[in-house]
Length: 146
Image 1 (tube, rainbow, N blue to C red):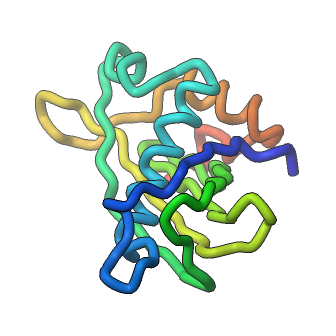
Image 2 (cartoon, one colour; image 1 turned 180 degrees about the vertical axis):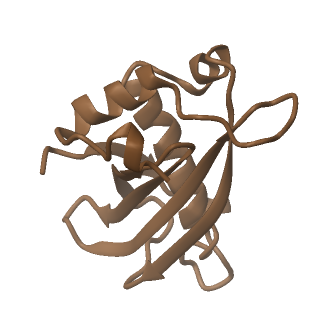
């Protein structure tokens, strides 16, 4: 597996809860920010994806927690795309501190849609090509994409 894209975040006070730990839902915010950074890194930021005539919606999110970050921690969010279908994709995230301790593992599934009809639309081929190039793996062929 190639090196993951790593997005670093310093935990802000507002990210924490009354117990002083990162509020559980903010891990998903970290993943959303890391996903945007991943897209910029492969050369197709969100705005460029829109130029291809598609928008994206999250349709599924999950997170398993195994620790917690606190105020001023530097959090590293490792991102990989693990599935590219015809119109949807799944990204997986591992959230660690700078010592390598894992706090959470998460996944987000996004679907591409036509912004005018909100109907599903194919993932743009250039986006698919760049993800496959970065991840170092070909995803399913056009005939088997779901």
